[in-house]
Length: 408
Image 1 (tube, one colour):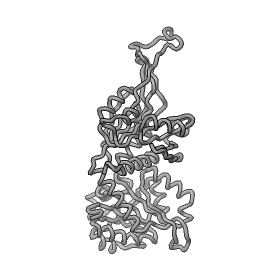
Image 2: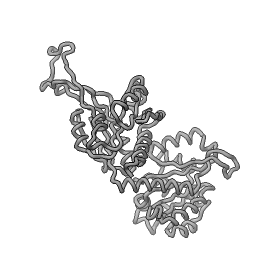
Image 3: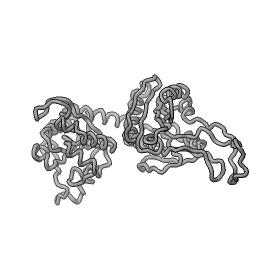
Image 4: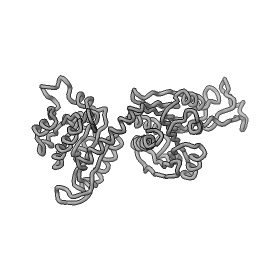
């Protein structure tokens, strides 16, 4: 049975579309889901606790402090119980509260305390939805990792027509089915991913090295996004300071040779993302002692190429990941150079970014990426937070992996 035994927490917000939550509950219960509900103060103006309790056959939660249940610490217990949390309708006011991390009632406190995915279902007047403040809040919430469905175009309760109509219970049901189908496949297949990130350091002597400006943030964000999709993820990280969830395995390395060794030891995996800015060159000889100024002559440092990790993974016939993606840090001719790179490396995707600009790429929270696949298809990701871009990349890679005819 579809969605059988899935635990779904529904938060009912204050809007005329709140009544549609009853139809969604009927659909979900018919398909075997376990449902709990939180009814906000404004939501109570449109839906009654008795209606929700009757349909869910479970208590309707309203207050943050409940004498009959506070021993369970509701805001923690509910957030941990759920497989996913839905907010419907999500009003402009509710979106605004979430952007600043409000915890003023049970609903907002549960969301702030949650470690699960949250699906927001917006519903509001078209002018409210298109207002710059709402659109700015949308970007912030997407960056936080909130999922969205809708709003749709249509006639609204106020009589106006446009974008702002809440997605129907059937649309939400289909979204949930697709969401859990992917989760179940990932879990059943025990999917594993490998992400390289950060710079490498190639030491000339004990104190000097060749490196670059990579902070490692984009790779770390991709690892977090893959992990949220249920994929067991290992990160091989050059010198960087980002923290990851405890269930992500992190291997710290310094040089390109160390990164290559750890990559080999981490195989086999289903998916590999080479986001590290690996130094292309290393000194032929590393001095054991600090090189003095008077020992240096012009052009006296001899270099040789480092091993190419992306190429190794792409051409590894014995244990090649099903999907191999690489990053291209470019300063000019971004698309041309990236098309050449994907052809020469034999990988499945290249994500190219312009590192000549200070407001994106290296040492920035933002990025602007061009995606190229092995068929030559090109997709542009406009400037956005690296976490937002990571979520998009992770979803594309998972979809391609699951679409692999030889995989399912």
